[in-house]
Each structure stands twice: as C-alpha cells, then as structure tokens.
Picture 1: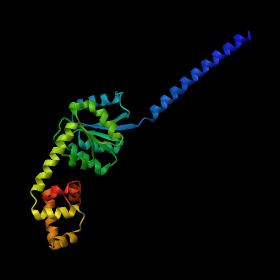
Picture 2: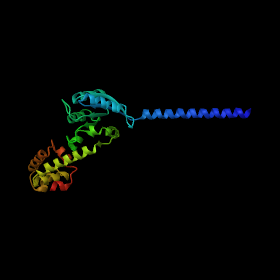
Picture 3: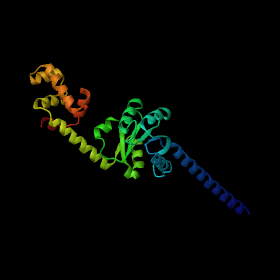
Picture 4: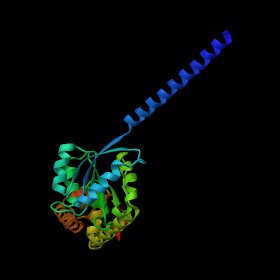
Length: 252
C-alpha cells in the first residue's frame, strides 16, 4: 500500500515538472517574440497594386529575424515626407521613379529632415544613379524588383546597421562612378592635378602656394576651376570626392 502511494506521488510530481517545463518554454518563446527587433516601415511607390503586394509580402513573411510592421503607404515623394513626419518609421522602402518628387529627391529630403530614418531603394532599374549619389542621399540599400526575394535579407541587414546592394546594381553603380570620375579628372590640366594632389595631402591654400611658388589667389582660381569640373558645390564636397582616390589617379 505504501509503495503504491509513493509511486503515485512520484508520477504526480513528474507530471508537475513536465507542465512547469512546458510553461517555461512558452514564456521563453513569448519573450523572444517580444524582444524581437521591430522594423516600422513606410512603403513608397506610385503603383497602388505593387504597394499592396509588397505590404502583404512583408506582413506575412516568416523567415526574417526582424519583426515587421508596415505603418503606412505613399504613392509619391511628397506624401511620403508627410507620412514620415507623422509615423516616424525606422525604414522607408522607396521607388526611384515617381511623380512630383522622385526617389533620389525624396531620399535627400529625408536625410535633411529625418536623418535617423533608413532608406532602401526598391526599383526596376539598375543604372539610374551612381554609387556616390546613392550614399550621399543616405541610401542604405538597393533591391531590384525582379529580385524581390532579396528584399527580406536587405531589410534585415539594414536594420542591423549594414548596407545591402544588389550585386548587379552595385556593379553598375560602381562602373558608372568610376567612369564619371575618370571623365572629370581627364579634363584637368597638369597644374590643376598638382593642386588637387596637394589638397588630398591636406595642405592649406597658403602651403599650396608656397609649394608651387605661385600666389594664393592663383590657388583659389585653380580650386574654383577644379570644383566646377568635378561637379562639387564647395571645397568640402571636393575633398570628400578625392579622399578615397589613389594618388596615382590624380597624377596621371
């Protein structure tokens, strides 16, 4: 009799342990869901049908680490700017070609007014902007609509402070940037190349003038011509543009 009582007590205790373990697993699972990073997203495209498809794809996705909430949708850049101010999303997925305000202009406006918002281009085109223009506009990623399966990966990378560009897009953007860089540098005179090389080395205008044995005003004139050829609004942009160049690129 005593053995039966002890045996029943053992099985009852074992059942309680199993139930407690299951409860702990459920709690841990719920906590992991709660602690999942949340990406609040604004979708922008001038095609209403595509917006609906994109929203459904993101809302019902299961494979992504980042939890997604589509907070709003816009059909043009101006509407997008207003919705960003209202909803303060973490990420804006943006088409390039839209009426009223195109993707690049919208991205630049977002960088000025909402610098913390991440920007991902979702476009059918792979050759519309160069790499510098994309990065200067604050764009963190670029996915082709024909490669929509990459969109979830791109979102996750961007939400973890990484960049993600479709390989085809990156190749075309880099090639375009390289070609345009060679074009404006090819137009420089030998003296302008000397001035640009000294600028890259960090010399002041006065030091450049002393090194080249010419007047400071002449240096200013050279820099103005170089800036115009490079398509830079000011000397700060020019310094940024040449910062990553190999010195041999400036001297030939």
